[in-house]
Length: 327
Ligand SMILES: C[S@@+](CC[C@H](N)C(=O)[O-])C[C@H]1O[C@@H](n2cnc3c(N)ncnc32)[C@H](O)[C@@H]1O
Image (cartoon, rainbow, N blue to C red; front, side):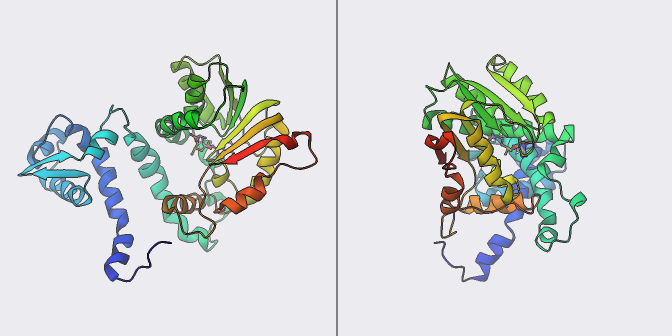
């Protein structure tokens, strides 16, 4: 269980947390971490490179210094090890674009409507569901480019965790531009993947699959997973970050479609936000579900117990030997 808050300072730390997020995002937009990658610099030197007034760069760097994202020695600032590994453009584990674009430009503004969502003050036209949002090509590409960068790493982890060596056909529902599919195909030479996602997402996915040299093994299908006919039969169905972004009442329907698409003995994999049964954490899973609720008001925060009952295959279907797992 998290420790109960007792001090005003602890409440302030939570309330003002968005200022630290913004310091990080503006640092990324200014490319500060990339400019610091070739060595420590003073505020004046950075202001010169970025071509902006020195007082503003100093204020941003001071805020970042207090978060530990940058360090200071004398009058020179440098990257922390984390900034060097994860925020410098082109670094092996760089996920700066995911933070710059999807989190700062898209997710952050959605939070402004959270109060109206909770009080049910918005009509449907004011709520940008994934479908509405991805219908805008520029938004879909901004979202998906940055998601792709963020998904290649977890895709590699999934390939290590789950044995797909006997599988020939995987259906990745809401598979985005193929970050997971690319890693799974690289690790499993016999595997082919079909991705079902919105049309503006799959058009970018086709480019990504081609760049990865996997166009012949990764196919795309444009459509809404809640309405489209799913390709079948398949050895496995993956749903990564789909269920947290749809109305809760749609989740059993998605699972029904997944089991119906499976060959006997196939597997269903759900990778998504989930909090402990006592709802005590993990903090980021709880906060991400709140974020999703800001644009999908009927989305729900699920626990392992909820998932176990949803994932149970229907007893009356031939797929009753299907295996399922939630991560
Ligand atoms: C957070 S991204 C995850 C992408 C990929 N599954 C991964 O984990 O890397 C969520 C994806 O779900 C897709 N999505 C959300 N609702 C969907 C729906 N109803 N039908 C198809 N795709 C959907 C979005 O377009 C987006 O590509």
